[in-house]
Length: 206
Figure (cartoon, rainbow, N blue to C red):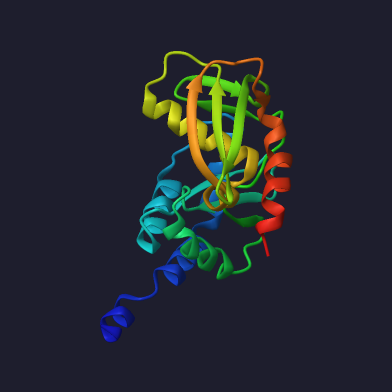
């Protein structure tokens, strides 16, 4: 088995060799998409395929608000089994001028807008309720959108939670997660969740 693994090569090392060879093309695609210019996504599609060779849950987001740096976020899409692969892959990234490599989706500001399934929603349109769930925090999100299937609503909820808390904290610090359509006035704004979560989680984090 060891000999077979050696002959196949290390998929993490192979990914970064491929990335370094194609960094210029990847940067060109990102800039074209940011400027709403025609662009292929062949290189970034290949990136996704190669990340899945490392672990089937690995995925990525790539983009830039300005020309430089381009940020590549490597994520396990909330799958705890894939977290060690994320950490190792990012930890073994070589120096890549013009790129910033980030492990896991991070928290974003409350003015961020999410677009999914033809819908756009901001934090202020999302409210939540919370409760203790053993050593974690249970939450129920209320999303003020109509016309989504249940699985679409669930997918939107998890991305919103990643935006509010970061992927790592969602996967390791939240308990039960429920989702509903609406905007009850008694529920709290999503922008309050990070502070509540941090205060609740602090005694259990070492």
